[in-house]
Image (cartoon, rainbow, N blue to C red):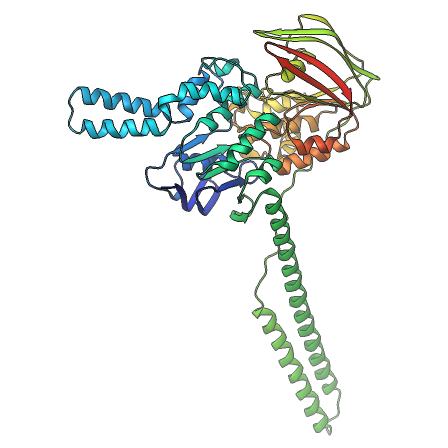
Length: 549
């Protein structure tokens, strides 16, 4: 029986702050529903509720059939000692099924009552989730996604892109009836995106996916659920991202037109009532000026005044009977700019036969330069060394040989892939103030508030923040510190679409020097790079090429 997912009157909040209420949704076989909304709207919370990892404040989650399995891929994979095989077994449900199967086997061996039924059910579940051949399928799947590493390799030893491919492999391995995917495209290169897109286009069970990748959602989504945090509402749309945006724009234009019509009609009736009341008052004033023998004229003037009063009353009553149309709320919008410092020297950076070696990876000699005003896209498949090269340029990874030198008057702004610049037990407010060298706490609070990071967030530890919140804080640092050279590593990861569009606008307006690593196709088109640095990996080595664009 094909599975389906049913959400009824679902509600959730963060502390005292409500996220969404009254969420009703049915996701049927073959449906791929995108969950969209600004950072903090509750997208991850919703997926965690459905996965059973977080209790809702109200409402219910139901699957049909009731024993349908739900697989959940969180926003970031673990980065500790867990191996790729262990991670895949856990995320596909095989690890839990194996544990239950082992317990059932022990109960059967011990002769416990009902052990045979428990054993049969556990075996069926283990087989249904793919436990019988997980090892073999994992090797094949890693090859399919282009991840040439051993299955016992710890995730903590992988690059961000390689970890993304390991996450992708766990999706492809999954034999769950229902899939929940939270930002599955983060760090995925074009090849990985193609594999994921093809898979979701052919999947038979219900899928809920939270993603900021507009092209991806256009290609896979059959419907969109918008969590509108500001209006405290849930909206449903048919089709992909472009269909959703078009429908939302049309709905807003209709709402604006309806409000304008209501205001025009209300004001017209009010103006009519006011004029007629003024005419009545004027008629009565004229009547008082008539002499004592002008009885007929006085009666006529009074009758006219009463008729004006009646017409004014009817106009006011008509205005009160109008169906009130609320003014469409102007949504909060991030106004993002990059503060620009005075120009740098003509040559910003020189790399001469630079070699970088890390563990089992070697980046072969890189010789190039970065000129003032260059807009460089650093491209290459996952694991080819893009982040390693950026870290070497910034002095965070030592170079093995060669020469790397920065020009004069270079004022750097950076955004690392893991958002590690804002991590640890330090409060966000203190961390941002330290990064900016700012002693005026009020100034830092004001800056963070512009990025939607208010009083309830700035006092929290950095490690307790979502990756989206940390991304916005990192962008706030870029806005608060004048720079002329910007190095960005996957800046759109964990950012909502409104923030991405503002970042695009800021990068278009920035006339300094830019080096960017991104797999966001729309962003690449927007920034129009003047040069491309490309890395090609062959085994444990990567080579570098550069070309004008």
